Length: 175
Image (tube, rainbow, N blue to C red; front, side, top):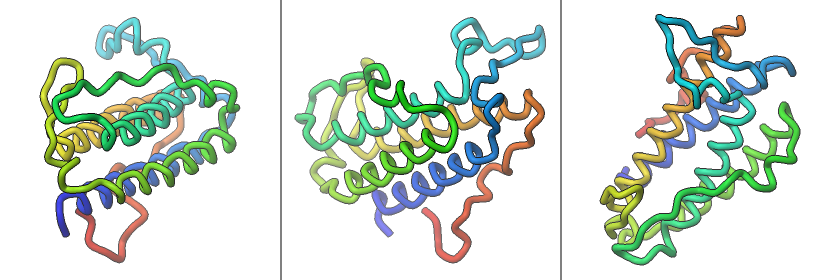
């Protein structure tokens, strides 16, 4: 298994696992807001994040980054994702999960098409230098970061989230 195949296998499992989290939510939990306390200060920006907003952010950022990585010229700067756009109009719940599943299928196609040249080229993102494959690993970290926020929001609102890394795939080697 090469590094791209390892990335795809782990990224795919993490996104599918995210769908498991989202499928557990009822209408009220999609808009749960983090509870701050002295022991758990999440900051002013995070205090406004909901599970629906995080889901849209993940879907938008992943589609943006995975669509930009191949056409980006070596040495160029990866643009930051814009606002979620069309997904803003998708209702929270099963419709948003379905939209994310569709976007994820397209993202997997984009990943499969990446060449060794794309994976080795250097690029800039937020003032930091990456190789293509290094940037992909950062995308995985970004997803895990926000999945942790979704997990916290679920737990704070009384829903026990799935165990992390108990991914659906049990029959093949991951990563």
